[in-house]
Image (tube, rainbow, N blue to C red; front, side):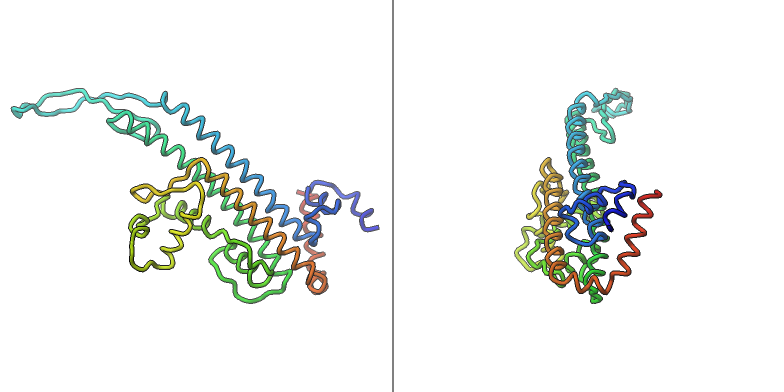
Amino acid sequence: MYAEQISDLPRKSCVFEMSLQGGNLAKLDFIFSVHMFALCESISVMRMLAEQAEKNVALALKDADDSIKEHEYEEETYDQYGESYVRQRTFYSCGSSIDYDHEEVLLTHKFMITQLTRRSAFLTMFGLFEHRMSQCLEFMLELTGFEGKLKGMGAIEKAHDMLKKVIGGKGITDLDHLTVIRNVMAHSDGTAKGYREISTRIGKKSPSEKRVLSAIRKTEGVSVNFIDDVLMDERFLEYAVGDFKRYVGEMEAAVQRYHAEYGSDSSKIRRKGWLRRIKEHWFVRMFT
């Protein structure tokens, strides 16, 4: 009877349809299915961003050779006898790159294209993932009734602590390496300050230094040049998407196991709150 009543409601939401069909995501209650579907959907968006970023890089690199402009200007200089004279100087520009050397301008321009495009795509991916994870963390707290303190600075770190401490996902590998790469890109302009010195130092390293070293060594598709710039090659974005996807799958499996064991008891306590949120969700989806 319940299914007959809701069958006439507008089917604007893909999550709504999957839940009615009894799909894998509907093993959990409806609210969590909404959050998990949104998180899974974000993986598809990330893959699209990664693929488009690499296409943009390839096209820009292809056009780079024909994009360099030659300029001339007059400057005053002096000969061997100290007499001044005016001479013509040539310099080259391409985008924001300017130099007297044609090849230097070309290489700098290509470097900027590849790194800034990939950096922008990755930061967008990470922000989207963090937003979706914050929603899933909120539900996990509601599902379990946990009121203790969670370790970590952001939603991703706190959600992982929640998985280990409460949900039972101790075997899930965290995403700390991608968090470190994100912080380097967002807060240090892509530079792992002191990396070369730290990596060759024989003496003791601080926890933060060890964290950076571990992240760069663990992450596929990144390297560090002689001035400590963290470089992303064509493998990185695909690797990041794959690791996000891996984490989502493991998290979902862990929460489903927890729900199968404890869900019936906890749902009785929070049933009224869930029903209210379900109604609110339907209302928003139908009239927005």
